[in-house]
Image (cartoon, rainbow, N blue to C red; front, side, top):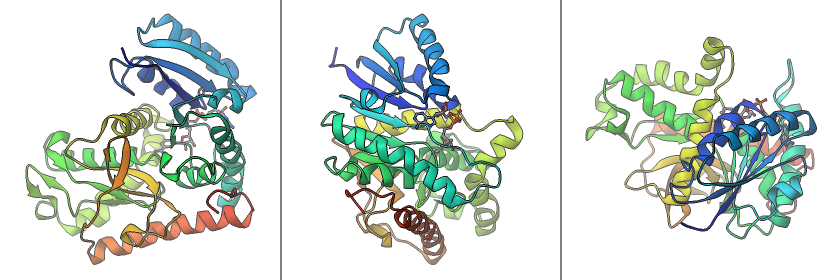
Length: 331
Ligand code: NAI
């Protein structure tokens, strides 16, 4: 058996946290031969829920699960951690402005970034799930100047998986027949699910669907799927968000194989996205690091949509910056 990996989950008493921890403990996050220790971080109001979940983890007798710690202390939660999954965040209140939401969350993700900087293991990998995920990742990283920027990522894999599934349903094929989908930009309603490089059984998707369907059905359906789930289910995406998080970390650690996927990573200026933003890109993981897929052509249809999503990221970054909430790391 391999060396044990410490995994921290914040917001562990919440819905996604609950769906996530059983997948992690069963070995699906890292692999069937990797022992894991879980660190569950909550705020005091969520501690009892996290403790109850820890009882259930114990009752599941997972062979790979070495240890479970429940705490409301970020320093303890991130001490020696190898993988940090930042789910806990402040939900948008009724009528709340975006600036208030950004500020409330920056006040969570700043200190968590500092705690990661102070205590996490050298190989720390961070994925931010809690919204606004891209900007929360930027804030956390800016408070972790000693951690390389490429260790901070935001989850857009759920959007990617939704796009793959919508295409498979439309074309009556298996999801495994769909390759080359990309989600660009922000994990918000302005995200851009792009099929211009996608293929189904080797045929370009652009030859199989018309632009009207793409612009008026596919893109809004994927971008607004979270709201659709809430409307139908009466609660937000939990299992699918947890599943996408598992996919993201699993592929980051173990590699993407032959296909790229989508993840929010720090821009290096590729595809006209300003450096220093955490933007969703087509990425492959090789040797445990995400690399942005280079050299893809971008047509006018895509360019306009990528630019709109990036403008959304710039507005969020400027808002947290104006509030003085970016740390010294990557201001
Ligand atoms: P939830 O409200 O059920 O759980 C959130 C938990 O976080 C609560 O138990 C709360 O006590 C805890 N929490 C709040 N502040 C914390 C802090 N400072 N430290 C530790 N824990 C803290 O929410 P749910 O459904 O689990 O969703 C969590 C987040 O994930 C939301 O922001 C949601 O918008 C986001 N989300 C992101 C997706 C993505 O694709 N990136 C998809 C779906 C949801």
